[in-house]
Image (cartoon, rainbow, N blue to C red; front, top):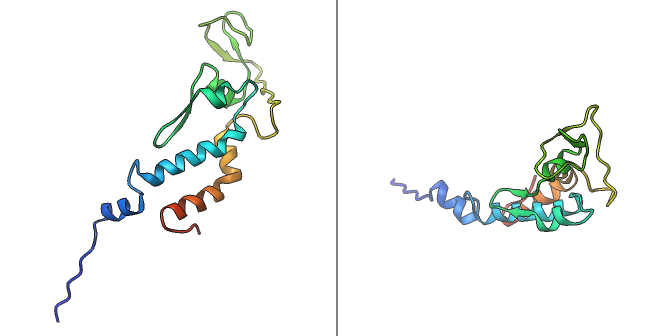
Length: 138
């Protein structure tokens, strides 16, 4: 008895499901994460949240001279002035002793917004993306 089996390559299977690098599902995941992070990003004036964001294939980047400062959530001061309102171009350092920034815009908004969002919404995002790939989350 002769048995012949024809199988797609792993690459073809991944492409069919939209799971190749930079594929449909990866883009959908990144866009969904950016959308879900929105309520967690500091937004006193809205610049960081609305204007200075770049969504790539596999990343969400918040641009601006203060993005890192807001993400870490610790007070930084000018090396020369010792002020949080350092002169333009003046390098900054973390205040000693460390002091947490205060975020008044919303209870959810604050530092490390991606990690806090994932803690709250990770299972929901996983289920949505698994469905987009033709599967289901465990």
